[in-house]
Length: 191
Image (cartoon, rainbow, N blue to C red):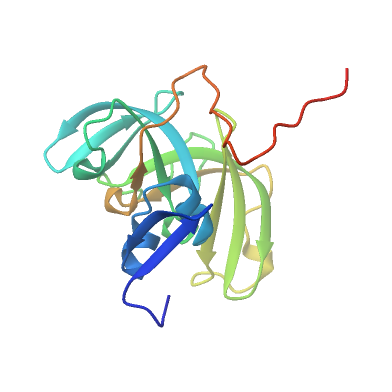
């Protein structure tokens, strides 16, 4: 990514996405590209409306998140994504409130399943109410060691700027299963 002005990400001999390195990383257009160039948190959502430059995207649990409206591209159901380093993790108090979430930020509550202090940052795995597991890379700017890492079981709020949300669309319909790639084998249990 540091040596190229333009990159083609290919899959099975076909171009998945072509563009500048920053565009491919920040605005992947397929699940494959999002995963090929790093870790991505992906959630399915229904498009609930548009407010100026932002689209409202409603998750299965009713949470409404926002993303740049231009990325929705007229779809009714999309898959939205956010990179782990774009997320901020805030501990929730007993009353369910988090300190300074910011009114314009996307917010999604969950529970820390796993925390790993790795020096420059801490990696968290956070499970949302509907069972999605999101990866968070939190820089250790405000901590002075592993003793200050949020513990497993801690309720947290993940926040991020709507502009950091990318959209891959359309998402599979509710209750449907994604079609198998014709080049991939279907694995069936023996009868």
